[in-house]
Image 1 (cartoon, rainbow, N blue to C red):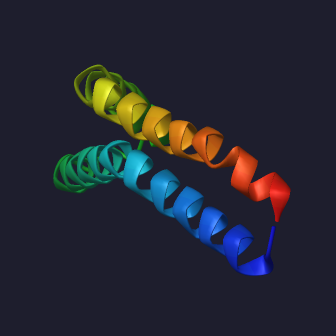
Image 2: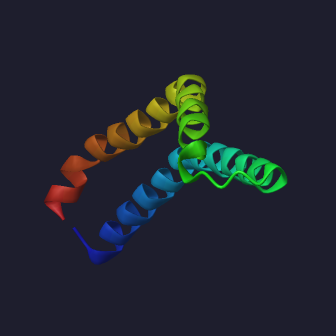
Length: 90
């Protein structure tokens, strides 16, 4: 196994992590921004107020995008396992 192959696998794994976590991060960002704007407008400065909406938003996002995330991870692992003989013999 050469250094180039290890770097390619690591790059693909990092890209997969970014791609799979992006929906939850974006939902959390949008909800946090909306709650922050509402807190500013109403002058409520409670730090724990964003926790429940973010939790619900991330849960709903996981319910919607969970199948897509799992398919991406399974495809990546399947590709790694199918090339395992090639990696070991190098």
